[in-house]
Length: 68
View 1 (cartoon, one colour):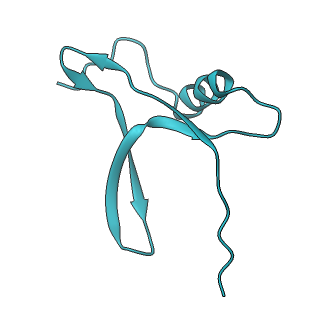
View 2: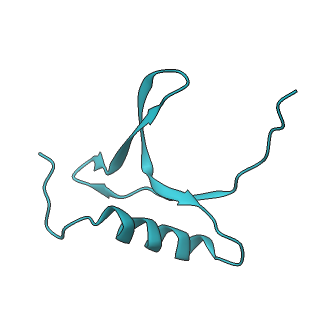
View 3: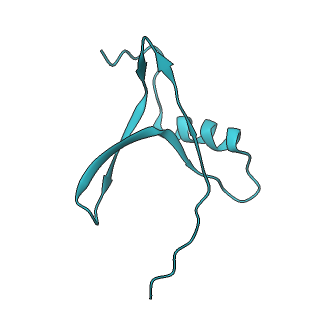
């Protein structure tokens, strides 16, 4: 039997001109592409806000990027 665990995450929805910023991901088990707001797993002792800030740094979003 597979053991399932709850994984706490923090995400941030950034909206500009009626568009939202999302990250592309890949589910290898389902062989599907998905999109979700930026964020990630909350590390032990970390606040949700710290998680979101860390994730933005990890994806290195340049300032002033316009996705169209």
